[in-house]
Image: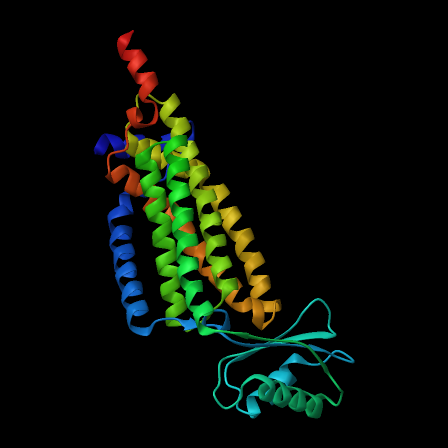
Length: 316
């Protein structure tokens, strides 16, 4: 181990960071976070949005643009409960999504909403569409979202197994699962409303985190191919050091963009952008201390990456 430590000091004039030195501590923290996240989701559940619970959708045509916060305030005053108000293609088109409520249904609900909006904004609106989303449709969405996430993980495992090694692929997929579980645990803690934009954000987190992990995996594969006299522990540390600047810059730029959406994107994009921010931070950490560390723990070796090349070498 002392020889490994000394060899980690410098490589081609550049300092090699010993990331793997702290992998046990980070593993322990990750396991604790996973257990806490799963426990919180089991106890508290999620704050499902209208996309999952069903409800009524009303589209309106306006005479002139209105303040959406004013509309939300007045709809809340009449006791509509959970609802979502947003513009469609233009400022003159308004869509209102309302959670199921026994007090108002169908035409009665539409009349109540139109009357409230007319009185609050002083104009005559025209109803262009009324649609009732049944709870059964909403119940299918969590299942479909789960299938989408699971399918993404399977496709990723197959691709990385073919491109690199199944041991490296297993580390990447487990790291992605780690990222999503902790992220949804935080969504449950903060009671962030889960709608289709959150599902899209989770898939975006998988895509971002996967991109970072593939870059690191490709560098590990390249170093395994060129550095025959070094052990996997050193090669993984070297690969992480070589890609560190790229990882930090990419993460910071993406965080800035997500932060801009969170601050200036309005209420509709807050959940999406917050999920992205959480996922980027967790995904960046897991690229170093979960994906690569797991691959090392399960015994990643050079022969796993280039079995045919090593067989030919042995024959020679």
